[in-house]
Amino acid sequence: MIRTRILSSGHYLPEKILTNHDLEKMVDTTHDWIVQRTGIEQRHVAAEDETTSDMAIAAARQALENANLNGADIDGVIVATATPDRAFPSVAIAVQAALGVGNGPAFDLSAACSGFVYGLSTADALIRSGQAKRLLLIGAEKFSSIIDWNDRRTCVLFGDGAGAVVLEACEGVGTNADQGVLSSHLHADGSYQEMLYVDAETQFINMNGPEVFKFAVNSMSKIVKQTLDAVGMEEKDIDWLIPHQANIRIIEATAKKLKMPMEQVVVTVHKHGNTSAASIPLALYTALSNNQLSRGDLILFEALGGGFTWSSALVRY
Ligand code: ACO
Image 1 (cartoon, helix red, strand yellow):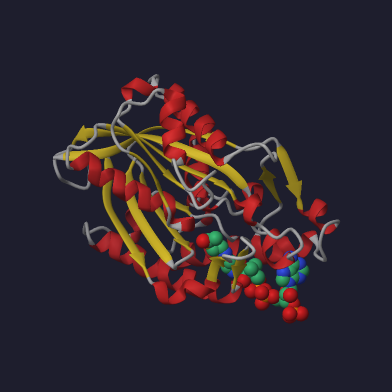
Image 2 (image 1 turned 90 degrees about the horizontal axis):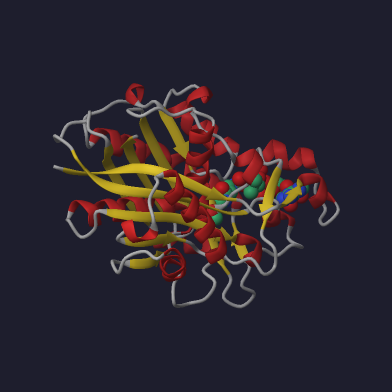
């Protein structure tokens, strides 16, 4: 049977770093408050003229280089983003043109912070149905453009960046020993729209932090069980948890429910802040660069975002 495996990854982080101490000078906050509540110490912020497309292209270019491939070797592009440069054409179209990707599908996917896992599941469906052999999947965000820098409740949480993977079809035998995506699950509940949204008038993020926190912890443990049950596996089979990087306390609570020691959890939130759809591919890239992951390891990805949307994927690397 056809499986979808992760061939390579790439990343891009803007040059400018904004520390908690920098934020102390902008709003009524402290480094200690931010670290205690979120684990975040710093975040990268894009230059004014740097777009989500620029970041997506840079991350995708590196993923191609790491796979020794050219754009022409790729069939299509999916970009998970909540902060596209413009309504259309999509960021994916900009990536396709810049890197010379073939004339397969190119589209953006909007699922806020769960966008990358939504994209992974969608790419897996395209590849397994034979519509594409190799796809670029990118998470790219410029959240600095939708943040009210005078609102201390939200401006301390987010960062900019992009992460990319090259996905390709491979042959599996249909067991859990196969390389590639083994199980993925996508969910949404629109009755929570007002908990986390971009205000249509101000174009700034609004969030009910405590409600997002509660929902995240509950939904993550449920979806993890669903993802493992679907393939008859257990928590102890997971080698690595790569969660959406919103808040260290949410990550620790999820790891605890999975009975996973933090040594098996990839954490980048302290350096990147919450980069929404870019957070998981950035964490994956970081773990690969640190030689934390080996081929054959079982990785669990999970995320919650505005909507609410929530998603998970179990992947043998
Ligand atoms: N510095 C100092 N004080 C602050 C700050 C700040 N940056 N922000 C808020 N406070 C104050 C509040 O005003 C409040 O003060 P008050 O009691 O005098 O009114 C106090 O701190 C407590 O505020 P809470 O919102 O209750 O703080 P909480 O402990 O819940 O932490 C946080 C807030 C960090 C946002 C937490 O709720 C959280 O992490 N929630 C999840 C958020 C998240 O993950 N969002 C991303 C989702 S993904 C996506 O799709 C974008």
